[in-house]
Image 1 (cartoon, rainbow, N blue to C red):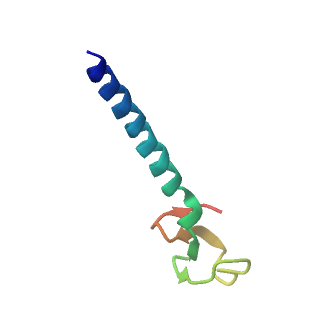
Image 2 (image 1 turned 135 degrees about the vertical axis):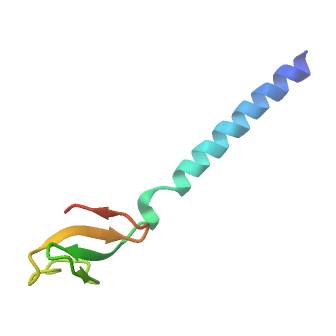
Length: 71
């Protein structure tokens, strides 16, 4: 009986450790800006101020994980 309880506790600790470790590994530290989608539909590899300046401004910023977020 004690061994069964100990196994369950050990399993719970191991599972929570893996979840906590995974959460720190999937944070946004590896996500970085790779370009912009301009309001006129063109793309730019510029990642800072002035990107899409002659194309109506930035519609969304493109990131390394494939997402595009509004400025």
